[in-house]
Image 1 (spheres, rainbow, N blue to C red):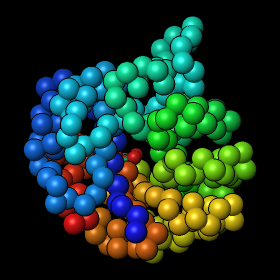
Image 2: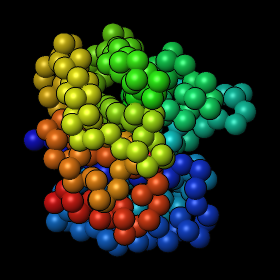
Image 3: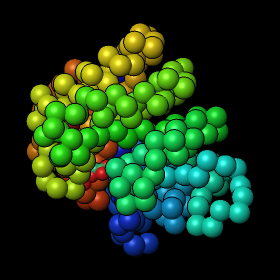
Length: 249
Ligand code: PGA
């Protein structure tokens, strides 16, 4: 039985005050009876606040990106060492906003992925097709390509990773894949992993992301290969986010 994960990607949102409130409310809203694993991803500058509020709580925290080196002359980047010093157990990698806005390539994402694993930080590898790719029936091809990167180079790393399927057309748009559309892709991801390692594929947690809210999460999470959500907009509201966590109970 795979434990569900509810992850909040806070992107470049929040102020010191609003993040403090959000952290306080989320922490207070959870107890031992909650089944899902809860992880939040604040902006880098608020990670120390997350550590302060969440140490010894039920909530884990991570970063939205990472540079694949321990240190160096790399202006503007954050190293794995720095993230570990602030208690980050997780890092989101290959988010479509990074692929699109910052032209991150598959090779760069692979380097980050392998480095995170080497450093004991669990990567959440994001994959997903654009609307044009879906309309051209290239969804499976695109996902296979993004996944193969990791599967070809280091299939065993799947044991220490999480995958997030985030159709680019559903991120921040209010459009959500239907549970059936999402399930088809999640099943495909698991099948691709199975070709390399059946046991690891069975254990691999695959999150869905793209306009998840309390009102649509239940139907998505009921699908056999959807193991939780990577949630953007709705994770910035503690009640909405906690509502999604409670659906897993
Ligand atoms: P959204 O973002 O829930 O606001 O669509 C999800 C994500 O980008 O991870």
